[in-house]
Amino acid sequence: MKQDPVKITAKILSYIFNPFLIPIIGFFLIYSHIPGSEYYTVKVRNILFLIYLISTGVLPLLFIAVLLLNKEKQRNLDNRTDRIVPYMFTAFSIFMGSQLVGKLPVPGIFRIFLLGISILVVLSLIVTLRWKISGHASALGGLLGVLLGLNFRYGMDFLWVIIAVVFVSGLVGTSRVYLHKHTLSQVYAGFLMGLACMFSVLYII
Image (cartoon, rainbow, N blue to C red; front, side, top):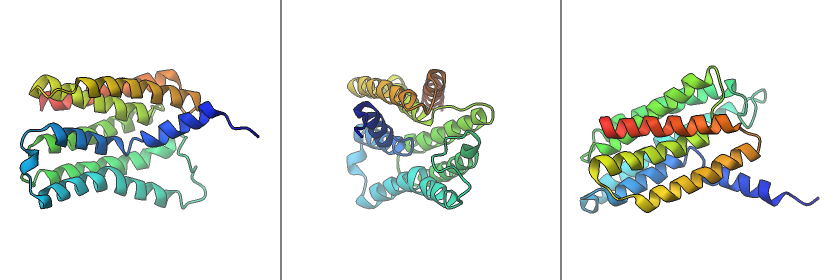
């Protein structure tokens, strides 16, 4: 039986731009643009990267993997209620990561970025208590909010990256709707919430 190439492409986009990978992309974008990063010691750079990787990706994914050992759990976390506990753990993990980053001799933007992500996850959790929202769209909207915040507040030039993120967000959002994982309103709501939250955190704090 021939598989639908559009569906395959949609799945690939969903995997590549998974919400757990977006913070790492944001980290590298900030690191590559912030002045003075080339003078960080190898030790500081590695510790900073590991904190981001572990707090935003490794620990949350391990926690979800443990949950899925329970055969009664849905393995794709499609149900709104199945996402509540993972959201709680993820928010806590990222918040602890922000506290660790705050102890490193690096600009505060790295701590604020993680703090903003933890706030965004908490907001997603609150919404999820009543309504399903797109985590993919929320993460990409948050990334766009970070780039816009850094652009307006610190004058970092992310023009082409911003255009690329908007384009990718459209593709991923369309993919989530095509795969019947979310409705169009859930995608828009997630994207706008992520954008507003991260822009506010990066621009105000």
